[in-house]
Length: 153
Image (cartoon, rainbow, N blue to C red; front, side):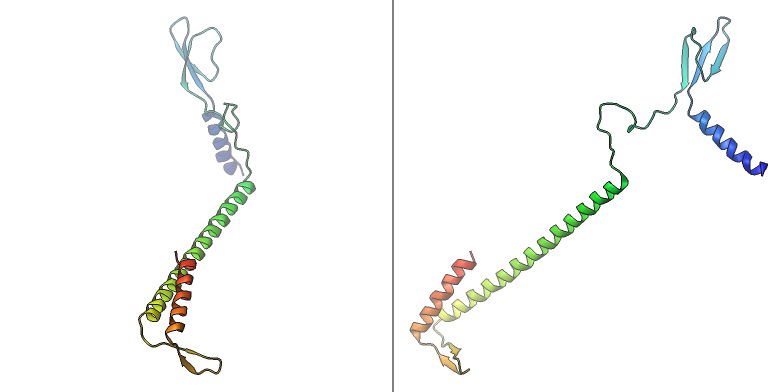
């Protein structure tokens, strides 16, 4: 038991001594002295400065960070959720833009076909192909141009 207690005590004393300042001074006889407490009447020189207190306990005029770990974790999760939401929105916007570009390209090809003078047909309610005459093709071309103007600027 004693042999296990000795390293613990030794570790405690070394950490306590490391946290203290060491001072050096000369007495009236010229002899140099070292101590952890400076004498009141002698001029001393500091050999080792004690470590400063953490910045959060010092009152240095700066804002002190008092957020707890749970608050920091909550803020991190909120930022991560917002970033995921923004990424999802950007992905959806990109997909919508691609869909719109494809639709506009299809409308332009259809307009080129309608105005090209070739024969075109459409299906009636019975499922039969009915060929369009010139007036119907002109009306279809005008309708397609209006759709392009409205949706594909």
